[in-house]
Image (cartoon, rainbow, N blue to C red):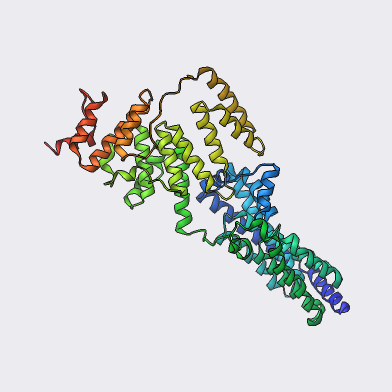
Length: 492
């Protein structure tokens, strides 16, 4: 049997001497495919890459490492989180994802070259890169797992002794739970068993039952530490979801992420006039409608242009309060636009809890900014300390601490009353008028009043409309904006 294995390696290696040209062609094709992937995703999904950094969280602390140990695969997820810190620049994200897929293509090709003597079969090494790039495009942890899988198979092929192969397979089980999901470990063991059958025959291949049994026992031993995670997520899940790169879901997600990014940056005119938001509104996109109305409010043109939009319900100004990524993002921006930092803080914190790590960089940065605005120095410093254990926030921390010191000197120690009930405890127009009362010195007070008046227009409530118009000085003795004027004239 040992001689049989020796002959197998000799045949494969001798055939590889004349395969330099084929290998060069393969790598050239792989490079072309990876360039296409980089260009396509870089042009069509830049905000998705940026959002991956914001939704990510990584700190160099013992507590965070223990959190990673409670989920499979710990080391791989930890490494993926570390790399995604740098996705704030979308070009870095493009390069990392492309490089990961390229490494998979290289390792898969090398594995097949050592298994098959027929050169055309080695071209199957392109399939993992292409399929992962198309169906699991933005799941870096899953791509790293495939790198590890092919790397371990390649290392296994260089082990010459049967005893060494068995020991290596046994070690792959406990160590594998830190690197791979359970189905991936099973795939690794099956590949090793197939290679053993090729080299040693069916009799010795039967020994691979031992690592398979170990694979079934190990989760039971470890289970008590991760009992809060559902079984299917602990041991049977591949750790990814299949979503084709060209799917409507990905393109709709990119559109929403672009809206969030522009709104965070205060680029309201770009959001409203240059990013096809109005086109999406006409197609019936409810998310686009909310962002368009938010942009109109921020620009002060909502009273003029309200009737240009297909809105017939005041609830379309913001989402009902529920825990979801899209609603938490939008409602935070809604209250931020009104200068209600307490409620923006609330939604930023809810958003972070929906992330995989129970926290995320974007929410931490927002919580720091809102705490500084509200004069909550201790809270801001607490979150700045957390960010100091990451790798990419030195400039941010320096700027915010300088801003905080400056704000301390100018901050009014008498914090005004911000409300006597939970936000959202009243119908929308009454809520806006109450906020306008409590934030009477806020530069955003007019926006609150306009929201209330617009809500009465949508209700068709002329009496409340006239009361709200006359309750504040914004429109007394002045010509009303178009939407207000047309609504009033309809009742004459």
